[in-house]
Image 1 (cartoon, rainbow, N blue to C red):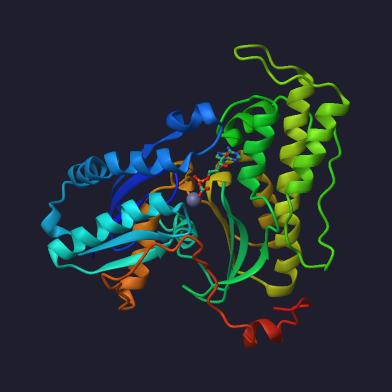
Image 2: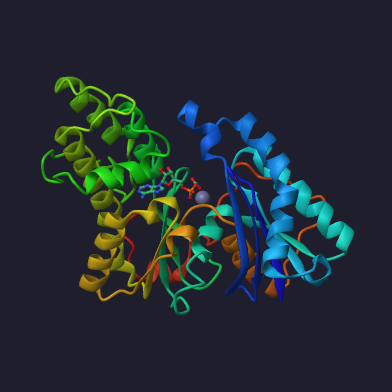
Length: 358
Ligand code: KG4
Ligand code: ZN
């Protein structure tokens, strides 16, 4: 089955042609990073206008690269949510119109589920039960998957997403946007043990995440130590490199601490680590080390599939289409779409004596 995937939830316009959910024939991404860079973050109105201008040429390029004619496409998978409303609407409207015109099925995909499926292309099949740690600019969630397509959030951020913390710290130091790649690069020359930032403890004892406190701790450290933001084109001090390394280390330790604790209770057979922050080599190394310790295989997407792309949307869509799911033309973008479809009284989890309230 040839699925055309379309992604436009945030600041990437992307289209891909994927065969049977595992083979990428093309994956084209038009990034808006340059457009938003002067503002240090995504400007929603600019994003949707840019999607509108790019979507048709990007879909055409994806078909051409795949050497596939539009008539050969069997179905369309499009990101339905979560994301920015104006951005989502461009993809959803385009997919609907195309599916209607071609008289083929289409399906709405949860963007976060797309990230889960980004590991499908270069790894052996996922063994269940699995854990999926999805860390991006907009989301930080740890999911439990007893089987394919079933999701239970077992840890989530209470405030900022991990990628957002990278972006905000980068902004404080005037290191540029997006923050993740530049902080990772500087951290390689810094000492991660130099500054001891605290890992947030959630008062109700759940293994959730919180990165807003860390951001404040970094801001305080900058202020108290009179660290000047980097001048455009200027050199970068060792102090800033140490700060980047210590901050990154704290984020990664925090992410994996909950994974380790919960893996001890739920015994997953695979750990998926995906989303934009999964590009981070320090997180990859630490996850692999944890995997070795727990005897748990860890699957990552390759870097170009970690950040937003449409191949992962096509792969997730394929799973739903194969199960006979198909959207109606009345389907709409869903800004706050959630990915959690296991009921509270899930027996499997109960049997495993999960200590916190599910
Ligand atoms: O998945 P993604 O492309 O978009 C969302 O769905 O949010 O993730 C983008 C996020 C940004 O916050 C960016 O700073 C972060 O991923 N990111 C990184 C790295 N590369 C991208 N964070 C840490 N280290 C990196 N190397
Ligand atoms: Zn994403």
